[in-house]
Image 1 (tube, rainbow, N blue to C red):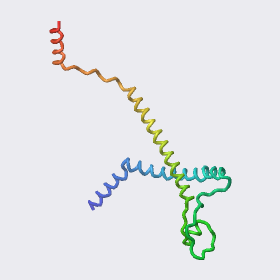
Image 2: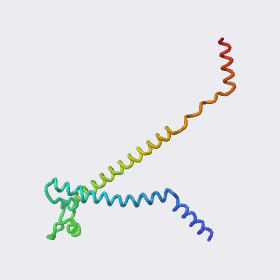
Image 3: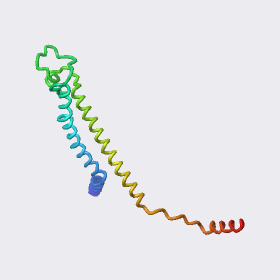
Image 4: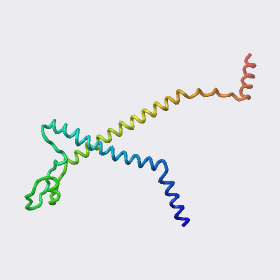
Length: 154
């Protein structure tokens, strides 16, 4: 019973540590942020790209069929072909995910840059507000030797 209690106390200390909670919050916010980026790509960027290319372009359903199963005569959609066992190179889905990654990396870069800039400003402000360092106190024996030196020069 004592080992079980010790184990539970150790687990409680581990789970309640600040770093563990920060990590959990970061993962939750990161997952939500990933959904936002997915929406930006799907609902904002891809429609603009479709407009520029002159029509309905759905990159998630763009693919090349490398090999069809023998005698296949069904629909030629990505889902139907992969379900039928065709070898399909889904370059459109890859392109969409790549754009998601680039946007997410860019936003994280901008956020880290902003945080570093804010930290720099706080550090600079703290340095400006800090009192000037106290003048160094010269030890008594060094001061006495300097006085002797100055007397000998005269």
